[in-house]
Length: 637
Image 1: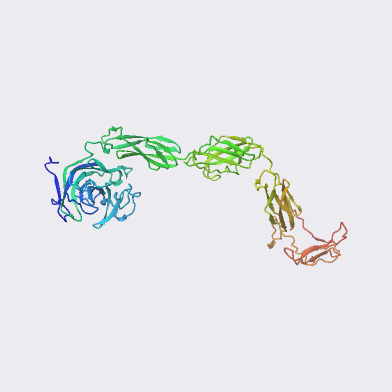
Image 2 (image 1 turned 180 degrees about the horizontal axis):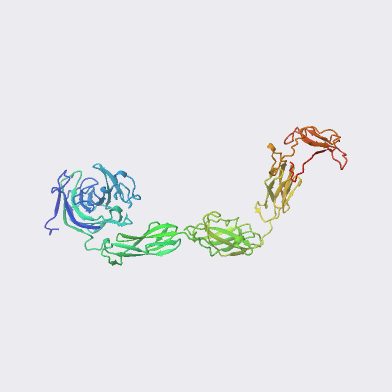
């Protein structure tokens, strides 16, 4: 640099906050969304900066949203280029946009609520970089900072020595605004002697509330807020401001990215090839540029490096193509389709009572493994009348595990030596509630082995005992097992009642009670039996004058409670206080009113009709009667 005729000297006296020449110089330039600042710089051998992890400020870039002489610390956007000395100068770039902060909602993440908020902190952040939020002068200010991984301006003579001249290059590119929202695709870069030491291409510098924001001013403002710890100096030479890096192709050459098609609606499992058209600021088509593709929601839709998208599950996703820090996007809406159809159902291993089915699992039409309804029939299968598999690992419903995975399951409870056909259907949802079905699978056939007849060792009847009233029913079941305790099915079972006057039982085990008493219900199969005990109680007369089977609309004719003695005479006489009842043929007193403590309703008023030993056949012990009017319906209880 010995040929340079002049350079800017920035001399800080010990304790001074600004340099000896006053410390501020501004230069306006044509508004632009990209700005490149380069300069040569060296520092005195005793340079220690501020002695703190902040300051000194060196170069600042302001925008057209602030006045020509607005202070840089509280603006709509200030971008900083500087170094922070920590046993060596560490390159540092940062942002502040204090004027954009919603001061009434400090610490509230407004990124999903409004674009009228700070982009560098205090109101949330969308690019993921750390931000700061603190009070200064009665208001909150913010910051977003990027630093190189290690010092570049080194304390000792040799490569990188701070006392030698070094070339610094910096570049800011404002992020895009799409659909009135700021996208995190801005660029922040810093080169030290040609080596890129800070590089971020996914930065939010502005929100959608500042779509017309552009850089338009460079401010040289050396400043050490706590005062310079020593008398020290820095020198700046050959300061350059441009829209892009001089002599190189920069990402700013891409001005727009258009993705086609702009919107797609497709079913789960469908694909779409997207393309990206790149243009520069003049509208000229650009080719040969690197394009990266991304999906905002890979669980809904994925996209590969060539722009081929695939629908995974129902929902919406944005497919974004990015080149040179500029992005374009397309909206993908994925809808559910019918579940897939199993096409390779096959019968594998067989025993006398089981077969193994094999197939490849399919999609449920909503991006997940389908469930399955499995059915079978002896002979030729007809889906509507076929039996659902109810035993074994093929029992309906069969839950899916992974789309495309091989699956086997077993159907149990088949008959030996029988030809069967099998089918499955894939579905999503819940059977008999909201299930959505695919097409039926192919038909798979197989014949069970002849096997050997296993003897019945035990028969268990359930329930083992029942107490009930006359006129009710009970369904009994018989569980048959072999000597090893295995349940046997498909065997013939016969049913019998030991006292058919008390209760009867049908061939399916349905018992019906008739009269009060006790009986034993027996199930027999293969020479083995099991039993259950049934106790039947008489149905007591109901209280309140109503009877369980009395038809509606009838009128009471008589209600005789056997409360008075029956006359001891063979004559036809009325019963005193009998409510119109009469007696005849009671000369021997075989008809009488007695006390029976076991009577269910009125133990003290029980009619007794006595048949003594040797009673003459064809005669009755006594007769009680009531003369009825002419009626066409009669209910007696």
